[in-house]
Length: 79
Image (cartoon, rainbow, N blue to C red):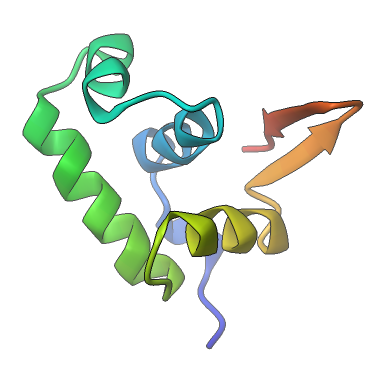
């Protein structure tokens, strides 16, 4: 199932990136200055939009859709 990458808003894209940086849900909320529940809700929306079931699927799909890329040995946010 193919999804449109433009459906991820900037906050959702940033959440995906921060997950690749091994940030916890509370760390993501603090860094983005948003409510903890908003991170949890956004993550569920990301799963639905990308058509995935778990974090591994999220990261795989983000690379497939070019939301994330690698630069050297680092993961970068493309959008």
